[in-house]
Length: 158
Image 1: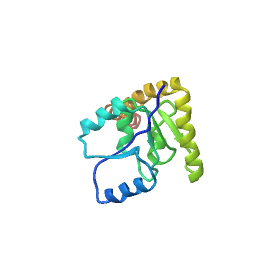
Image 2: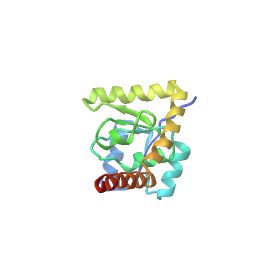
Image 3: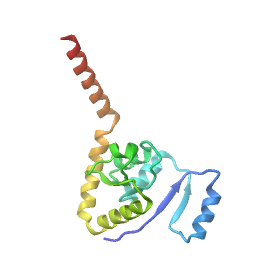
Image 4: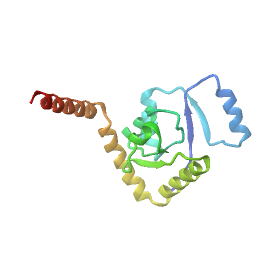
């Protein structure tokens, strides 16, 4: 199995030139700013060109990119923190403890190497990502809420 690391930053913003200089200074040519893409283009790129989403941020609730990745069958490696704790399960990704920078670095590195060395595990997580996306979909959530509401209503009326 051949692996390639691509890190693409979608969008534009006032800090773009600052971070482009950072990438040059630290010799990180595999990270590219690809500009503004439509939602359709983002989903196409996820579905066709992505095996795993490595999401190192932890100061977000449940970022949309995680749900978008799951819906495209892309497993997620992320911190076990905030909304990611709930969104990602052991069937759809790998969660890294959020306790120190060194533990995070080692955790992400080991998770990536594990998937490189165990392609059958990657395939299992891809299938799990699709299932998890279905579980977290609005259709699924509205059915669960309606079921819970009806259950509470029936209990109160007795």
